[in-house]
Image 1 (cartoon, rainbow, N blue to C red):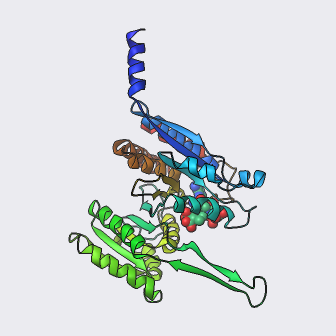
Image 2 (image 1 turned 90 degrees about the vertical axis):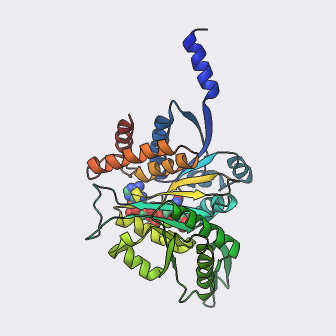
Image 3 (image 1 turned 120 degrees about the horizontal axis):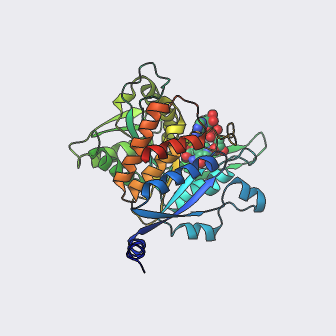
Length: 357
Ligand SMILES: NC(=O)c1ccc[n+]([C@@H]2O[C@H](COP(=O)([O-])OP(=O)(O)OC[C@H]3O[C@@H](n4cnc5c(N)ncnc54)[C@H](O)[C@@H]3O)[C@@H](O)[C@H]2O)c1
Ligand SMILES: CC(C)[C@H](C(=O)O)[C@@H](O)C(=O)O
Ligand SMILES: [Mg+2]
């Protein structure tokens, strides 16, 4: 064996392999996820290796054999270091079947209680705001409670006397752990938290959230915190987004607010997210915040930036801060120089990789 063969062998024995489950899913999820994988593979070379395992889950699978997320596949997913997800949802399938049965089932089964959604206005992006200012905040959205629990039902369905209920579940345990996560995150940022809720109407849950924030906040004297009703928060996101550093909110408010956040930074095509199981017991999942975008799917024009930035979040989660930072810098430069140039999904991927080189 030559020296170089020996070196290669030694290197391959040392090289750490990360096992990543890939659920590209539906619509543009299938277009943007391969770009994120290519960027990851390129960025990690020489340091570690990714072994990607595709999972055939989503609309096509459901239409083919009726499976949404079989138990054995859920069990298999548990053993991966992380999950990379594209988007779930298809207009041919009744709303909620895949979203609840697949996407939310994963977030709940893997206790991904922190739904982390950063927003940044990059140079070169045209914001619809008249005075965009500095936009750099993170929404910490609770991920496993609230109106997403599926508590409720309907009676006398289809009759004029039908009653439908959806119940918001908020536990002190569930709220406290995400509140603590937000305070820890604020300590690494500009040390300010805005709790967003609707305590003037949702008096039970809103009051509990506020009391827990106040109590936990006493342990973090350097972090200031204030409160904003969700309706007013949607105003400030447009008129004064620079007031936000860490926005802490429940599951549904966080969902709505982060689509608005995407719009103010130039489009949801730039908005990444991580569904984090902060205890490390289960895999975390990284996905753009946008959906399958049936209106543009199949045309190869979806912006893959959010998927690439979600992949960078995954790298950070796996301990590769420096590589994540390199990808973010490449994306930033790409947007600054080419953000307003119409490009295909694949071309954006090639341009980002060229910058990494
Ligand atoms: N995490 C997810 O998987 C996720 C998130 C949101 C919606 N959904 C599902 O996706 C389907 C479509 O939902 P929707 O239309 O309400 O929301 P959507 O996010 O798919 O699309 C909203 C708008 O944003 C545009 N858009 C989204 N991503 C883009 C990108 N990367 N580049 C350029 N434009 C982009 C779309 O063209 C559309 O005009 C539904 O089935 C919904 O339930 C899934
Ligand atoms: C598809 C849907 C279940 C999901 C959510 O509401 O969380 C989506 O809108 C998101 O933002 O990831
Ligand atoms: Mg959403």
